[in-house]
Length: 243
Ligand code: FES
Image 1 (cartoon, helix red, strand yellow):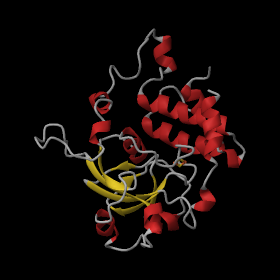
Image 2: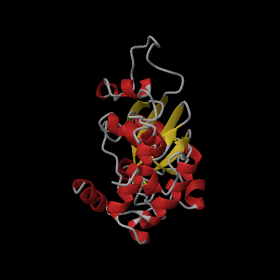
Image 3: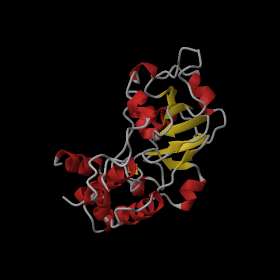
């Protein structure tokens, strides 16, 4: 099996910047709509995750007889994040301040379907106030806390929500959200046009919350400009099933 570094086309001792740059190039080459395939796309994605998570062993370490990963142990935050996630879907903690770190983000979310059903506009400055008093289903409106290191999509999924996605790699608009307040940091290049980014759209599968609070409208993939960038989700589901 090719090493993650070979899949990405970088040397085994490549630093994070080189890996990031190689990933941006390779993920575009591997995209099904650009001559690649869903399988190749997933292979590149998996290689990137292995190379950046510390689970890949550089060839130089193998030659030197090392048997562990690039990191001695997984980050503590990762261990904690697999604990009692589901009981925090309402974003409430015990109030002691002991678990909540300054870098957690309070995410207030709203489903675009609810916006459309009520005849609201996504650029209405009072949209979230209207949503908070509309007695919406918890899946459509609410608050959760995103932990450091989680992408927005991961944070939602870890708390039991099923937000839309397809490639999970910045190559479609299935996971797009409209950021109404706060910031999502997307270091990986993606398919969104400058105009869409200017209008506040971001990709939840690669965007990590970097502000204390965030207000997002998810499920906006059918809006003009984003609809053309969607991919069939089942294409990637089949690829995963074939792994
Ligand atoms: S799921 Fe394709 S870019 Fe996020």
